[in-house]
Image 1 (cartoon, rainbow, N blue to C red):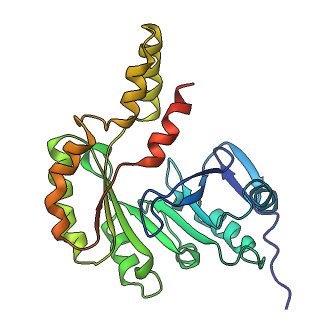
Image 2 (cartoon, one colour):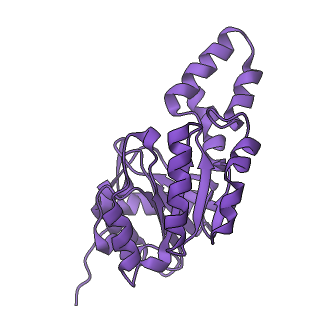
Length: 250
């Protein structure tokens, strides 16, 4: 039986993969290869796999994310993973995605090792489809891969929403990570320009590690420390966001 050739299929990425740290999940704090999916660079599966093998030899954890949502590109991501799994040296790679479930196909989720579901808060103006959460948890082939993340702004609606969602999600017995909100790309550039104008980039550097609206990370922790009574809760800063923010200013 002839196997399908996935090498010529294309994946759209916003930039070439970068090495960063896992901010949630079973490998939190461990090096992972971050692939941002979206418009920018159109590259076929063989070219991308060859680039990764050359530049990041030995890295066996890959995380996909997207500004839009990785599941918008479900077919392309699935095709890339299938191509990589045809090689013995890549078969043991851990594959994960960050998604809010905008669009999904089961075959992609079946190929993954971790599915990090972003529970969108009121400040985003969007909602994570409840049916996506239910479907993932009810599927026997997927439910053990599921974990949740809630990124929380320093406003009453976000805080109330998170405190309401944690007990509900806790009944699913999946890992739950709470993280504070940080500057977005536009805010980073704006604040850097202000700091550069007054020749004081120290304030900008300090702002990178300070969650948006929160007085400090400690204040964020104190707001949610009582949620640790629910199973599998983690309260963490977003290390990846902090590491990436400085380059966006330039």
